Length: 224
Ligand SMILES: NC(=O)c1ccc[n+]([C@@H]2O[C@H](COP(=O)([O-])OP(=O)(O)OC[C@H]3O[C@@H](n4cnc5c(N)ncnc54)[C@H](OP(=O)(O)O)[C@@H]3O)[C@@H](O)[C@H]2O)c1
Image (tube, rainbow, N blue to C red; front, side, top):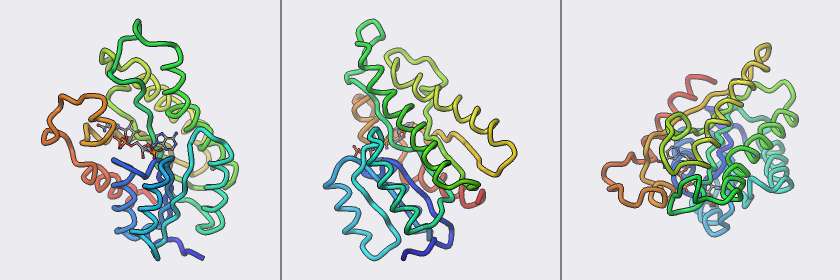
């Protein structure tokens, strides 16, 4: 049975690329027990191979599919017994090239909210119910697009803003216990999502996701 790492245990959603992948590497190297998932089986297999023998759980799972998430959480409970930190990192950008609200279809909004809002609410509820009395720190990976009305960011920006606001409600509902809910903006990073959204941005002007992961790990180490 995997022991909790010396820094505790963390679930990172969407660990197959970008910031999520950088967090998997950073948290494992810093002595955390790490669980992660994503939809791309080849990238989950790669993680399992690279980190074979370490305290990593890596599963193929779509955040939008309830029984996929249940399977991951059951495995986490069995191996780690508890979760100290949950990083809600998995994110959906939506249709590219980015388009105005007038140009988009209603379904373009539903697709983005299905992952960034409903998927996230669902996993938070499941974790709270699976670990009653837990003292987890929940982190929502947000974006400046959730607080600035950039043109053509119609589905994505509001999905981040809605989740940030939900975290404030969750914090108000958890005032008498030790669960904490915070939003973390990692900055403009050189990742697949950013390349799809703004292909004209030069990679050297963007932040390395490893830097954002290190900043997040330092912050969380102090909190638990
Ligand atoms: N890049 C930036 O400049 C920037 C700035 C601010 C905030 N963010 C946020 O940072 C987070 C990470 O994004 P990134 O930039 O690192 O982009 P990325 O490389 O595209 O990573 C997105 C991750 O989310 C996973 N994912 C998406 N939908 C999923 C689903 N339904 N189920 C499970 N996993 C899912 C993807 O895995 P699979 O495809 O394998 O499922 C992938 O691992 C996102 O929340 C994003 O909004 C990014």
